[in-house]
Image 1 (cartoon, one colour):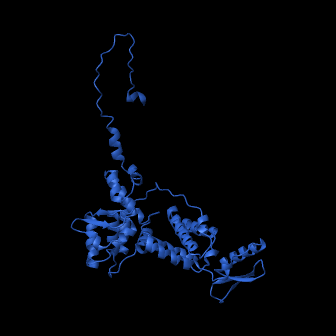
Image 2 (cartoon, one colour; image 1 turned 180 degrees about the vertical axis):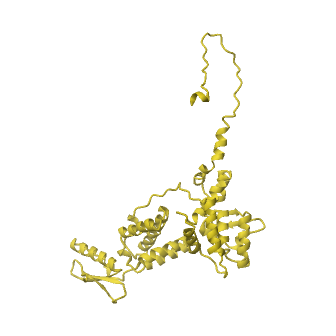
Image 3 (tube, rainbow, N blue to C red; image 1 turned 90 degrees about the vertical axis):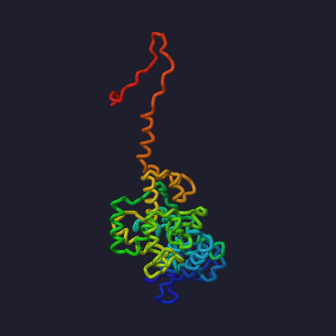
Length: 368
């Protein structure tokens, strides 16, 4: 049955429009995108007409698509944000959802439903959902500034509660399984895995590394712009150096460090790492968990938290303290010192009073 007030301007194109009379009787047409979006927008406009609301004059203009404001947001991100690579990846998902939609036809309810679905079906963490929501919000803020839209629907989407204390790291048995899969199915990417596991670098920093920032003689890698804006140097252990040796043969020591076997620069790891994790049957494990593994293993090896903070590039120690519980032997040794503390010698002699004021402490056996 044909839906009143909606139509395809070009039959079979999949791009739907709405047609309605405003409160003054003037016929208006708007591009909506998908059929469901057109139905939603048509109902919204009819409600506004019944309420007697005057529609803005810019409705006469061409409807701005989400794809257009997304492009503007990526240009802004490339010029002003350190997380451009991450934004580029996240925007790919958002464009698959809303590419040809009229930007103003997208509702908070629809955004929240989309995010809730991928959290449930694909196991996204709350943090991942929140980063996509934040990028959407930035996209609309820029569009409002550029006078392309009037409202920001992402602002009304609830923020998922994040468990920042949750740390997911590789056990020895899990690493063995994952290494087996990588060696069998993605052997050319083993250096990327080894480097991540032995440096703790964020993904964007690792894949943005160039040979000009690597000093093999001093065994250091310089990160030109860390997340908190400071220059820092990453020490390279034997495994990280071996990984760089393999990678150097692909690029002759110039330009981007991480390249495929054809010498082409790699933008990231999702195309191989996520299939490998799935094949290794690792639950809720992402590339960022390799960074958690790096920090966790340092703490479990007895490295002090201040040093771990420096190696991780944390701006404050509070971020590093999350790993403190992984050093039970260190904490036990600290409290065990109380047991071996020598008693201070008594300097006063017992008094001549008939009442003995000393208290006899119970033995450990008596407390059981």
